[in-house]
Image 1 (tube, rainbow, N blue to C red):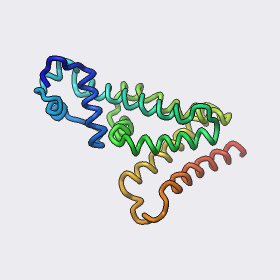
Image 2 (cartoon, rainbow, N blue to C red):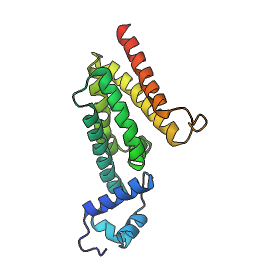
Image 3 (spheres, rainbow, N blue to C red):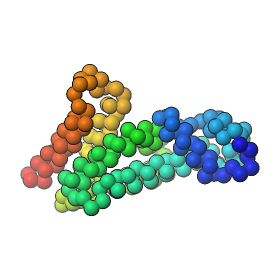
Image 4 (cartoon, rainbow, N blue to C red):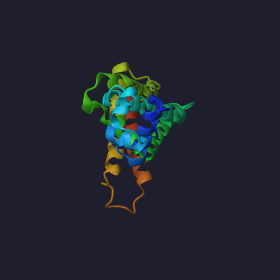
Length: 191
């Protein structure tokens, strides 16, 4: 590809394609330029730096994730919404490994822009928990527990830690993890 016709959107799309294909959460500018068939300095005509590119990819990943969660929970409340959220979360992480890893790597960089971009991730879980009549502080605690449960499961599965009991259904284990969360939540509400 010549640099003629190259746009920021094409650069971002190619970077996202690489992340989705490779399962990696990052792409070097050198690799991106190679994939686009251009010299690396040509990228700087369209992006400021790697951080600018990362923010754009991160924005895309967050939007995809939030849209996925919102579609899964639309019209559902309480336990039904929590279970649908969890199923959609697991599916997104499995089907979009690179983008999911990018989303989960956000706190490591301590980047204020990325933290701001990630707020909708938190709000999707908070919105579900408000249906239970929890206070704002309780919603914050329980969304942390919920997201940690989901991410912990995804992380363990992704790293291959569930290899030993391979004849035992992973889906049932996922459902059990979500049910444990709901049991704890209901115990807290009824206390």
